[in-house]
Length: 167
Image 1: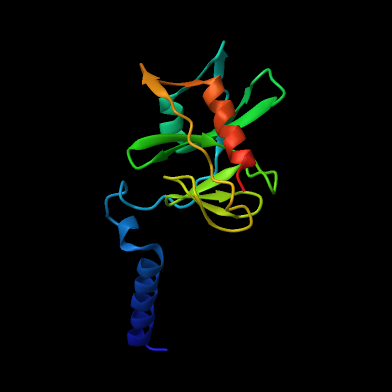
Image 2: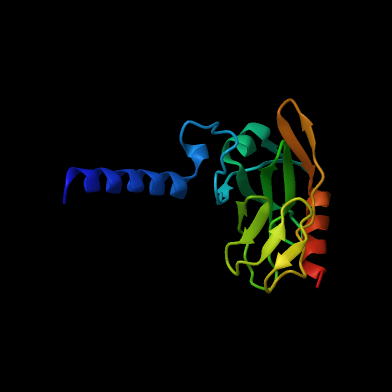
């Protein structure tokens, strides 16, 4: 093999690497490059009476988190997810009733069930494709005060019940 062939192969390999990883990864703005799928990180929420709180910085730093809230009712512990979508934080019921999962990966605006791979629109909570699409992930309203996201236990229970009974 002569030097010209070796050089041509080297150039071809560099071009292949650039095409494989995308131009955004080489000298581009990393804030616009896709982070790929983000699995949820378990966190602990603070519960004070009927108020559940989590730090907004924890959600922003991890992109996708989930936590459990003990309702002290027949519902017991309820799983909740919070994730960053664009410039907003979204909080939803975190259960896939038919398959029993309480975990979702966030992948470019889509929630993917960690158990059955059913997909849901992260913005609306509506099912896209899969066995559990008839169980949309209900939104949980919250307020933000001093960097803390505040939810009401009753709102969490309502979102959970609406997610479980749909279908």
